[in-house]
Length: 291
Length: 291
Image (cartoon, rainbow over all chains, first blue to last red; front, side, top):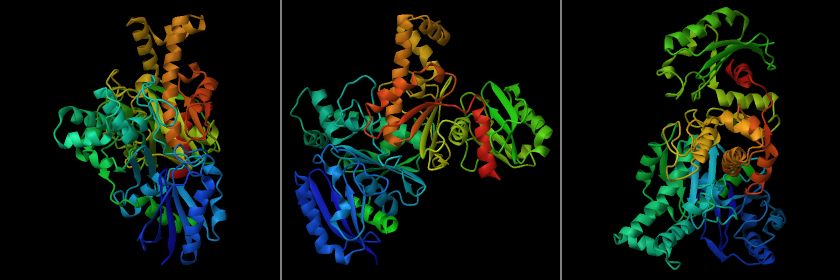
């Protein structure tokens, strides 16, 4: 059975483990805080690679940021990673093949292979976390675009500059559908800069009316975005993943989306490949396409 | 050299001619007003088919409305065609194979094969006419979605119900980027229900300031939509076609789009396959994929 040494590199944490070609996690997950310098990031990766590369067939790295079409490097800068991250020569860190993909794309691939979108021909995954990630699979292939950067959920919710997005532009879907967005909705609706996402969720649990209105407004914006994606892609399903996905009402979203699109009905589903879907997906991708 | 009997069926006109596998138009274009009943539509098609089917290898029909994934029928109802149009059994009209595709998809295919998007791996075409059509080509294939209806440009420009779209929903890109949209922009900005698209275009030509503002507002909305599509698809190019495309400033659109996307720069281009690109595209598709 072939195996990958998997990494998931995010803005705050790096996770690593060994995963086989069935997507089985074979050892405990190692966790590191993401260092603030390039050299320290390379050191974390190198140590882990030295420890395990003899036992595996490939090094599989899911990472924040867009990954090029040869799966070897990160394209340009990524908001929450150290400057110069895209200059890292990942292949130089191992004698084994190193295979990269964007973390949201990797997680979408895990859902497609072992999770909620198995057997579909067209699926859209939205990762609702601090930001919003996108992974689109069409006829057994990730949508990568000309350079590898496709699937960015930065289409506009308003044309007239209301809320600045983390990408530097204005009013992208990400800044209305993310955890950050829920906090901004609460700030605006309560006129209180200190309210947190947790306050909203806790308030909803206690039946607080205004907190429920805030959550619903946030969910309505997610619905607006999914309607557009459903009309563009006509997908079998839209999978919602990430830490914020637990707070949405899947059946309500499905009903509202399907009542207002020109394409045929789509299925809205929660992700089911688990917390380590990024590492599972990148391992399955690397072992099937990278060797 | 293989040949197709081509049709382009729209809400007001039906065009037909014979086209070879190089995309060459081999005879004069026949034009018919689109009849208002199913039987009359079938009669127009049948007469033309009887006249030419012996000389061709396939019957190639570009049509308004989404076409199923087996290229045999129209899915559901289409706004500007007679009720029941989707029940037509097109194959019954000829002893030769009949191959259908949506008209915007067919036109996008013509651009990809003989026009502005030749040689690209990912292209998005927007047909700016009375409405807005979309045709997306990814790695040598039309994006069709699970049922064939993908590429509908009905993502929302506002989340809060301002302008009713022709599809029955609210605030879709189509109702801000079409010819109809330019008239609505003018109506709103001039507070005059009787102003026409022609008045705006004519005013712009004469250097009228408010008419120029109206055209720019309409173009700005097109730019907003293209930014979202560029971030989602990371396309090599976005091709603009249709009767309204002649009024946009291609280089301004390209500059503004590329200054505000997170993916790599895309090229904005005018369509170049000509007025009969729908018939050319459907013929090339049918002759390469339908036989």
